[in-house]
Amino acid sequence: MQDIYIIHENEEWVVPLRAAFAEHGVEAKEWFLNQGVINLNGTPPEGIYYNRMSASSHTRGNRYAPELTRLTLNWLTLHNREIINGPRAIYYEVDKFSQYCALQKHGIKTPLTHAVVGKENLIQAATDFDQIPFIIKPNRGGKGLGVKLIHSISDLENFIESDDYEEPLDGTWLIQEYIKSDQTFIVRAEFVGAKFLYTVKVKTDGGFELCPADVCDISDAFCPTSAPENKFELIDTFDNHALMNQLETFLSKEEIDIAGIEFIQNEIGDLLVYDINTNTNYNHDAEKRAGIDQSGMQAIASLLIDKAK
Image (cartoon, rainbow, N blue to C red; front, side, top):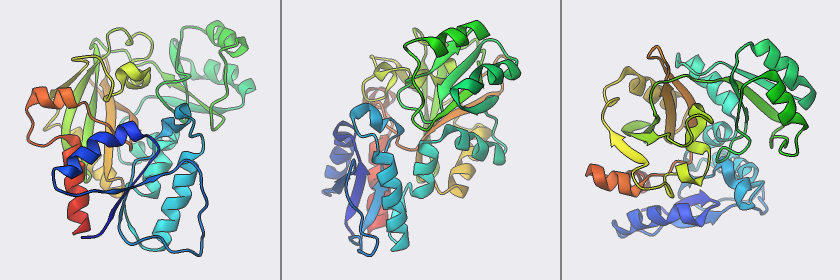
């Protein structure tokens, strides 16, 4: 069997994956990528590579980890190494606007969104957006940092002039419609091997008013690995929904193998996709309560082991 390499920048998130490999008697190797040197003329080790790089790496002091990962994945591709979540995955992980473009190309609905570069352009762009309230958020996300629900143009002006204002990492703001919904949850669909695994309902009480379309990213309280008890619940409501088939096709065409894709239902029943997480985590307690045959990390470990044989 070939060696399996896990590319990441967060030890905590790899722990359950190590346990899943251990169930098979397999120990994967790990590349902790936060800084380093890549020799273009060097040759990477033979093996299967799994990219788990996250857009929120900067919140853990690893500001340039995604950039280094992008270079590394391109180097691996040059040498024909098999990669799970290759260059396209890291591209979409750090660029929400490009996610929306790709989703719409495949006929999948997303929230109305304008991209804005330049602090001086925000007021005019918001005025032209012509929807109140609206959401402003960084194009390169990470745990919901910088996400704001804006109730008026004067609110936006106050934010821009406040000490809380901080330029997004890539210089790009997104102005996005506020999704009105009578539900107090969003849904996250998990895919492994570009195949639907399950959907999980994420309760939005306590964070819903702030930003229903990004509530999973508002803080660590909404992270699957550290959420409060019963915040996550596996459901079968969307198991046979046409959107799941659309998303499988989307992932396959875009060469994304593993992802958690979040969507919300608006007042008239439309499902709008607002985030693709190519570095996906799972809530063990929710999986255990649901009594599923295979957890998310077990599914990933099985996929990688099968690829390595």
